[in-house]
Length: 57
Image 1 (cartoon, rainbow, N blue to C red):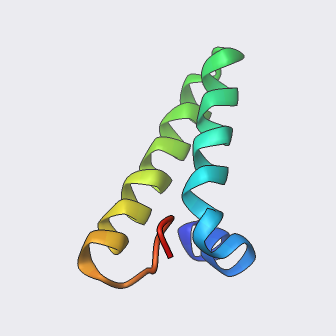
Image 2: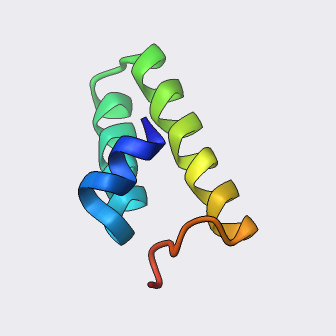
């Protein structure tokens, strides 16, 4: 999922994942919230490793 978000949204991928995680939280969708949180964590791991340009370009 992280790959798809990066391909589709580029530097905005983490923002989109955050929006989805927040939406899941608002609608009490625990599984979906956890899924999007893991996607965000993977994006940040890639950003810190230098594998993705991240939200700051």
